[in-house]
Every structure is written in C-alpha cells, then in structure tokens.
Image (cartoon, rainbow, N blue to C red; front, side):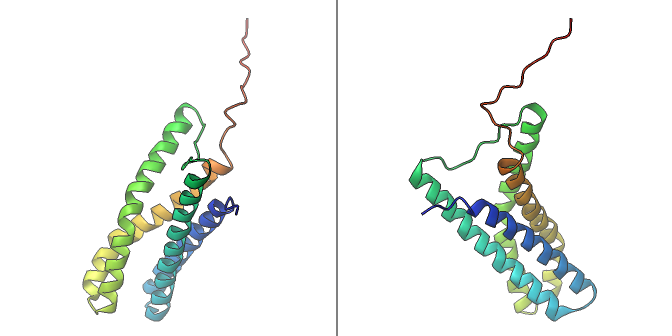
Amino acid sequence: MNLDFLPTLNALLNALATALLVAGYLCIRRRHIAAHRRCMLTAFGVSTIFLVLYLTHKIWRASGDGSLHTSYHGKDFLHQTYLVILVTHLILAMAVPFLAIRLIVFAQTGRIDRHRRLARITLPLWLYVSLTGVVIYLMLYHFNPDPTVLIPVTRTP
C-alpha cells in the first residue's frame, strides 16, 4: 500500500484546523457560543485525525525504506529558517493536545473563567502549530531544492 498522499492530506487537515480555529474565535467574539463550541471541537477532531495519519505515515515510512523524515535541502538562510520553524513547531505541537484537552474539560465543566484564561495562551500556540505545519509541508514537498542538481557558479573576470 502506498501512503505517499498522507503529507498532502495532513497539510490540508492543518489548514482546515486553522480555518476552524479562526472561525471559532470569531464566533466567541460575537457571543455565538454554540457555533464556537462546534468549531473548536471540530478543530480538535481534525487535529486528532491529523495526528493519527501523521503517525501512520511515519510508521509506514519506517517499515518501508527505514527513513522517517524527508530532508530539507535548502542552503544557508533557508535551511536555518526551516530548522527554526521545525523546532518551534515540534515543541509546541507536543504541548497543544494537552492544552486543548484541558480547554475542553474547563468548557464542559462550566469553568469558563479558567477556559478563557487558558484559551488566550492556547489559541495562538495552536494556530502557530497548524500554520507552521502547512509551511513545513510546502518547504519539504514543494520548495525543496533537488540536492543532486548543482547550480553552476559563474565567475566574472
């Protein structure tokens, strides 16, 4: 079975989660609590599906050729930028599920003040993780220089 389509699907799920988070934020700003709840729970569900498919892709890659990761071949500033985005994305991606579950628990148990306080921290982090997931996908699969192609250096006399 070929699962090469999963990175693209995962990027789409990240983009959908971003849209749902923004929609949920806009709903709560307008006091549309039921719509806010639907958007945020759907964003959580979409992010959960993403995580399952992401891990599935990693396991599939590891069981195939043994390579877990796709390398980024940009040089100098591009490579450093990629690494900064990747490291911050990974660190925050480990925290967001725990924060999101806590938010859901606070909302479901009526602890709205605690929910609001935590949401002010969690929403920007979750948005960052979702958006940088799309950026990482684009960098790895669409803007990743071919390492086998050498760019000729022209010298001026």
